[in-house]
Amino acid sequence: MVISKSEFMMFLKHPAWLWLKKFDKDKLPIPDEELQARFDEGALFESYAEKLFPKAVKLGYKKEGGVFSGTMYYALPDTTKKEIEKGTKIILQGRLEASNLTSIFDVLENKGKGVFDLAEIKSSTTVKPEHIYDLAFQTIVLEKAGLKVGKVAVIHVNNKYERKGEIEPTKLATRTDVTDDVREIIPEVEGKIEEAFEVLKSKTMPDISPRHFKGAGMDEWMEIFHGIKGKPHEDSIYKLCRLQPKDVAWLEDNGIESLKDAPLDAPLNDFQLRQIEAVRSGEQKVDKEEIKGFLGSLEYPLYFFDYETMAGVIPAFDGYRPYQQAPFQYSLHILEKPGGELKHKEYLHTEKSDPIPSLLKQMQEDFGPKGNVISWYMAFEKSRNAEMAKAYPKYEKFLLNLNDRMVDLMTPFAKGFFVDKKFFGSASIKAVLPALLPEFSYKELDISGGGQAQRVWMETVLEGKEPEKKEKVMADLRKYCSLDTYAMYAIYKYLLDKIT
Image 1 (cartoon, helix red, strand yellow):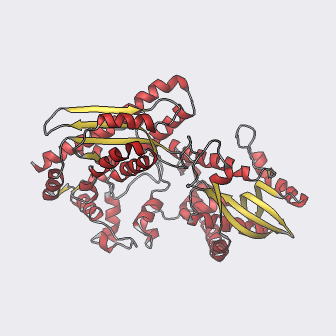
Image 2 (cartoon, helix red, strand yellow):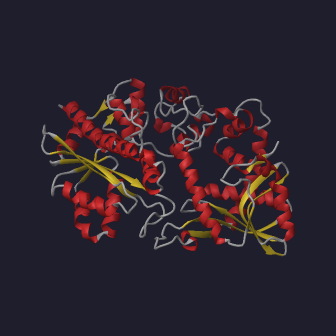
Image 3 (cartoon, one colour):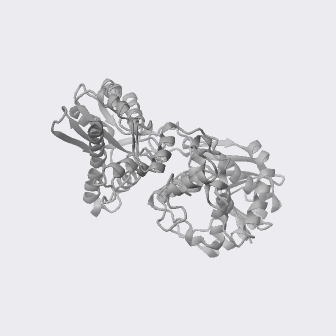
């Protein structure tokens, strides 16, 4: 049985992933639209990075139009060998195989005297640990196939690059040498490859429970246990079960009375501890004094505020950087006084142009000079304001004043002042809202998440896809963003009722 590079990386995430890929792949989650969008971003960056090698021979196994061809994939090793034997200086998207291992590489440079430099193209802004394992596997395959690998590098995004006119691939992409890091872990990777083949000898799937990861930190444990980040399929073995009773039961069965004693590297915060207690008891945990103090510190009028932003690996407009989060929309619910009438204001950019100037002009009209600005995870809004203040000095005083007045409504939940078992370990508004106020639901909306809002707006407005649907998309965006801020108001009212 052959193990490919992608399958080996699945094994490193969890042995069960590799086993399922080979023997029961229907149980693996299918990439949803959000994950597919990330794949598309990676492919887009790769197309620019490959321009660094204008004289390269590109192989691959895609037909015209990006369609994958199984025939081309299986023929790729022979095609790659022929290019190497011809002395081709640079090969893109080749594939070699040796000793039941196979790997596609992004860039292979013939440096002469039988030495080849290897590079992997990644759309991240830094080199990540998994990139080193990826390249170590590739190096092992190439050398087993008879090549001598020289320097090894990751070609990744330069997030300091600022667009001025046409995109400049030499400035958009940067190259980081990781030769020593790759060489250092090759013995470890060779051992992991042997372990992977042992997994494939089993007729049963490896254990996927947290007990398989007793040395892992909380974040790593959760990510591994639930599979890929993103929305799992309902029938998937990775269906979300974070901090549900069966997880707590496992901890208790193993003599763990408190998560403080759990075999996890990362210490748990008060919220996580109180979450477990809420699950055990089935009751909400409410610290009325803390909540009263938090709400009592608020100054009217209250501005419940939320941005939706665009961000792409390729900067859309001059002055933008890769992955820069730039607001294209906001929703604002205003409560002038306790028990007052709630007012709503909003802005949505609908043209293919830089949205920020028009958005800031409208914001300055909608906000008054005093009163707290309430957001959920306010670090995001504050960062956007700080960035725009720097880029648009005309609005600097206004934006920094908003930041000084900002309060995070997530605080009572993130600090464990209010915990409900239905939060399932999360203080996000998407977890808190349905638990406290199930009548307000994102599930009924055609756009139900920030990532989806970003993707749909960019496709519709910037890329001009399906123009006949634009009017509906804009209406859906308004509904979604408006619910975000109305939800904050509704949760604020819920907390008020709890302490009175």
